[in-house]
Image (cartoon, rainbow, N blue to C red; front, side, top):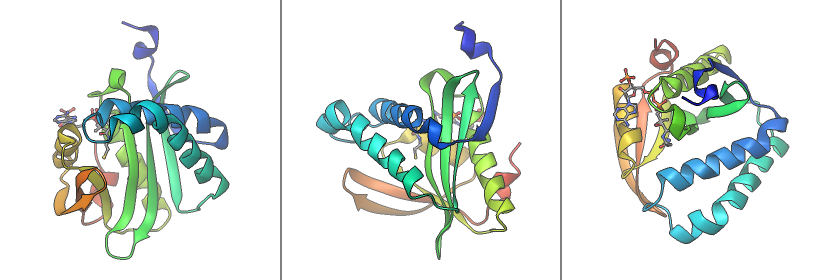
Length: 178
Ligand SMILES: CC(C)(COP(=O)(O)OP(=O)(O)OC[C@H]1O[C@@H](n2cnc3c(N)ncnc32)[C@H](O)[C@@H]1OP(=O)(O)O)[C@@H](O)C(=O)NCCC(=O)NCCS
């Protein structure tokens, strides 16, 4: 087993110093997850630059209701979550991104990241519904959200096929995951 896979996972809030590695991690996860969903040309040639721009922007335009949580094994990034508290007047808090690296999937890190994101939202005194968008074709992620009790609320056509809005009626259930 690789050395870092044996290290305990620690969680912390991301800072501006993490921008480059989060962007690279995010781009790689899209390349691995969205092949066949997003265009090959985008995934092969553009996604790294596009994600870097998005992440740089997120730290230039800082929003007090956005939280980014990293999961690390030593100094290696194992996953991250980005959440926007009270994003939508009806659907509430948005889980904007959630990604765990291929090497670390299935070890409870995704569940832990969503739990910590929900706890952060509760600490902001926001007890709202919780929602996210997932590609209809992203079956592993859908199974993950199903296992956490999400409701498949609606299906709409996006730029890369259908996306589903998954919701939870409140933040509490996610904040109290084991
Ligand atoms: C979806 C994702 C975040 C889940 O993270 P993870 O760390 O692998 O998931 P966890 O280990 O915390 O799993 C928690 C529970 O979800 C369920 N689950 C997770 N992955 C699953 C899968 N592929 N199939 C079925 N159930 C799954 C299991 O019930 C698991 O509970 P268990 O450990 O008691 O069996 C991760 O697989 C990932 O990053 N995927 C690629 C990027 C992506 O699709 N992100 C979501 C975009 S909307």
